[in-house]
Amino acid sequence: MAFGKSKEEKVYDEVNEILNEAKENIKEGQNLKATYKYRQAIRFLVDKEDVVNSSPDKFANIYLDIGKGLYNSEEHDQAIECFETALNLRPNSVDAWLNKAMTYISMNEMNEYALLCLNEALKLDPDNQKALLNKANVLRILGRMDESLETYEKLLEKDPSNVKHIHKMVKRRPDDPNLWHLEAKYFKMVGKKDRVAKAYEKVLELNPEDDVALKELANLRPHDERFVLKQAEDMLDKGKKEEALELLMKSLDGDLENIEIMEKILEIDETNIDVLRMKAELHEKKGERPLALKTYKKIHELDPSDIVYFNKALEANPANKNLLYRKGDALYNAEKYKGALETYNKLLNLGENSTDLWHNIGACHYQLGGYSDAIVAFSKVLDENPGDISAWLSKGASHYQNDEYKEAMDAFNEVVKREPDTPPAWYYKAKIAAKQDNIKLLKPILERAIKLNDEYREDLMQDEAFDGIRDRPEFQEIIS
Image 1: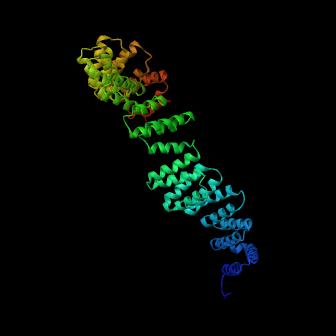
Image 2: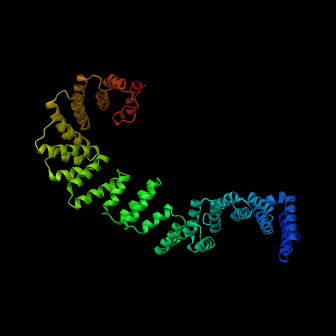
Image 3: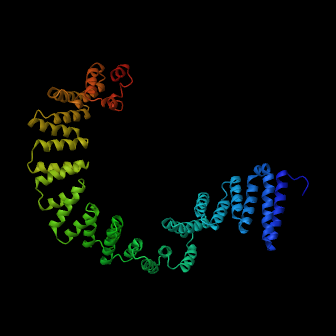
């Protein structure tokens, strides 16, 4: 050994001399001597534990080499120990995790441990194709076929040439339908539809009940209505409702006017609005207006915001007031206030003049920010029914939004005069007092509002009406 070397370098050189002897033994076919040398190297390193720990990366590689040598000598238990030592020194060693996994694979019934090691390797290097291939094989051996297929797919995504591993397995085990599944997936990936179909046909030959193969073959023949319906029925018989629906929907994508497929889908899922709409449009295209309207009505019942039914029905009878009312309400509930207002105005033009209609018109104007028009509408209601509390509240709120605080206060006073315990009226009165900086008036009003509805105590902490006075002691005294 050269003079002046560090302690670590001396130990490193000495252990490498032992390893070189082991390698020479292997070349000469003297495996027992090689094994002895590998064990000697381990004993030597154990005695130099303090030096090994001071240079973990360097000696992790040494333990890795010893482990590989012991693995080749079929000394699996000791090989595992070496790989574990290497990982203790360098936990992020992908090579150590892989070699540990390969050793477990070589041992009987140790595949679960091998899988753990492969997963650790893939955490460090997700694109490691050797780890992916061995993980896929181990999962297949363990009978976890879905995960195995998923891992093989990842392997193919990394490099389609990896299909050679699958082809070899298919030749060795042509009676394994799962391997034919992989063949099909590969051919699907490279766009060879005929080969995909042949692979899935082989799957069905081996396993006639294979749902995936049935579905894929149905997708490859999307216009064959009889085939698709048969596969769907088979799936339904097995309780696989979602798979049947998926198959039928894909078939429908290829034939948007197939009423039998639509009916089958709706037999399974009568709430499928997309298919109901397709069915309605198809009836309409064929001139089957009553059937179309019936279907559009079903859509509206499932989705009240959908007003196509009303539009279609009003085409035949645009003066139908009942339909117009219902259309306006549907639009309002869907927060389509402009459309709702236009619909209610059509009723006005037809001579309608009810308080309900003016309430609806006022509500639309309010939601659209037309507070002056809202005031006019609510005033129309009050002309007919001066005791309408809701109209007084809405009118007061509209005046408030217009910064017409006197008129707003008058409206809310009308409310409390008729129904003294109406919480919103008192809360709005408090907001007006706050806006006018009238703390003296605010105190009894706000206390009354909170007494009627304690939730206002939290609301007023965010309400912009109280921004100007929120930090004043008098206000804090009220809310406390």
